[in-house]
Length: 136
Image (tube, rainbow, N blue to C red; front, side, top):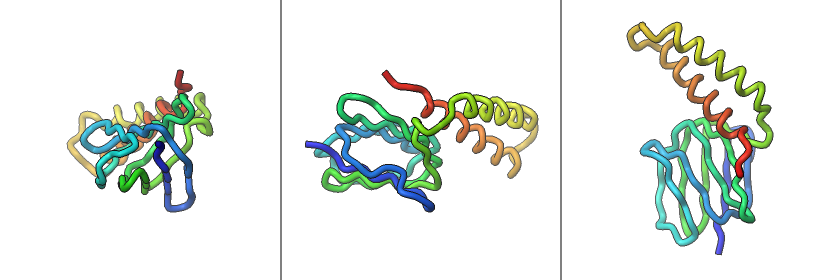
């Protein structure tokens, strides 16, 4: 028994296939989905979705959205997504360092739209770096 997983962004279908297990970055923590999981809808945070296929794990960087689980079908609707294998690790690391620097420059300030954008950019950069790492 397996799951059918679809990851959809506004501009593309990022993933459409079967999986043995899916781990979602929900807003309340990591959420594991196995065949036979109860039906549910959950909000997703910026983070990494992990997919187990044929005994190996693959990663997808997600930029927030929602997931629906219904009768072994998992549909993930996100603001943006990128397959981990398609992310250049060196470029992702450089983007993370840049995002850290930008956030640190605003760290002493009170909450502002600029600080919120910098935090979001930092979270997205971290997710891309994590997804780009090869799993064992």
